[in-house]
Length: 275
Image (cartoon, rainbow, N blue to C red; front, top):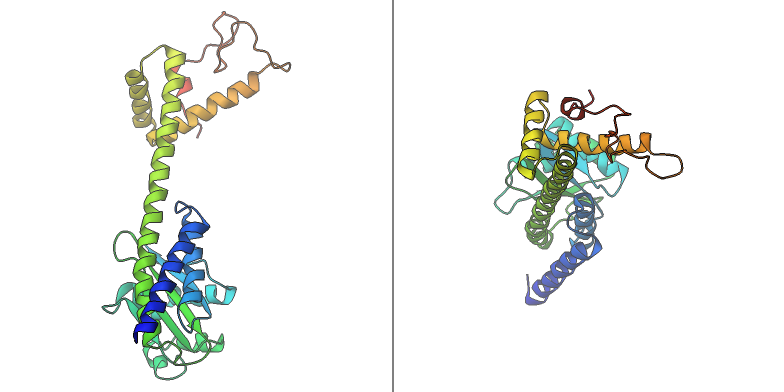
């Protein structure tokens, strides 16, 4: 690669990264995957279509393909456990890139069950770049071309660098999603503790212990118990709210009454999730 091409490559990669980060929050994993595919097809020489194969717990799924036909080809590789994407995920080369120069020629022998279907669908060349190397999720970026021998050394180099870049964005997006779920769980547990503190006159530590004991006795996750409790309070408010929008005398926010004219809700009833 001459100096001019190298400079163009750097510019293309920087532009792709900027586009990925500007289009949507990195917390949106599906949008991040879609942006990775779109940027790769635009950036890597020779690519006309693409998608991402994701392997989790031995199951391979297709994500964000540019067309239904690509979705079917990516999914077929998972079903057959054969093809450039599977090789890139499980047995990649040192640079993480696997190229099929001619699925109608010599590469037909390498992937004998997948290659004929790809050719019949109108694709003779394919390039797969590994995106993730650790953790429960492994992935590959799959690019397709109608003509054979489309992906040259420049395309391979670009795909390898792009794969590393995209893998970091994918990892960051995964972590952001997990962090967001953790924050959401913390918030719902905090709301549930507030309900118990108000209803039973306990402090924060005692309210949390009530949730823990309820979780253990029902074999439900603590966050699920908290989510049920908050939801149940909301449902009871709705059922017992007066039609004119004003609360009746003696009514508690959670629907229980303290004036002796309505049923009191016991601890066990309040914490018993619906089955």
